[in-house]
Length: 229
Image (cartoon, rainbow, N blue to C red; front, side, top):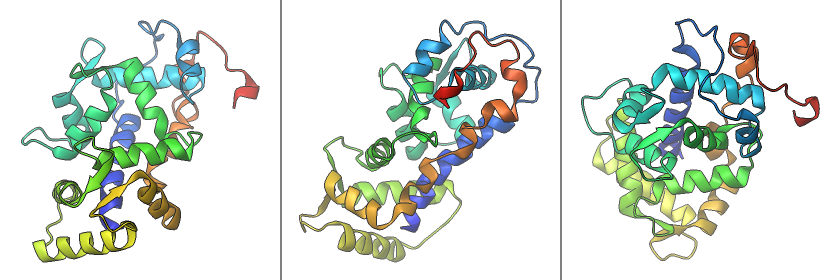
């Protein structure tokens, strides 16, 4: 399961960057965020977390939007080459298929990585990462493409024989129907046997944004209801 850990670990790198890149002054109110309370209702974030997330988003966006190139620069700190993994994650975030991410789209997407997000949602997102052709199942070649791409992003070079061996073992365990592909049911079973596959789908610091950066919500629009957690 090493290969899948590499893929999901890159997402943790991205979120960590969001929390550490903010050296500029954020002591101002979240202008441009129309209704954080409504947005919070559509995610697992609290109102204060939405406001803090918005301030971080503004620090990496241009005119309130992020395109694929900016996203890749933030995610991998490079724009020197095309990244299959960055493209894949961006495309999954870009639910409106516009080629750009506004804050609402970004917040709703990254909500899946919150500790309070349902495991079913995390499992669904992780499955989509590998289903490159949107066919509802993962083919061997798709798995290899993602593995090669994520290993390259991690700066690791494995021989083709080693890569093929890892893929063989993954399919041997996951492909219970022996039809040469991994469907959602088989993916779910694999994750149940190896819960660590979803470990990096949970970013604990998303829950602690307002504690880590209290400046972000010093003049919050709406006070969180204590019962909302």
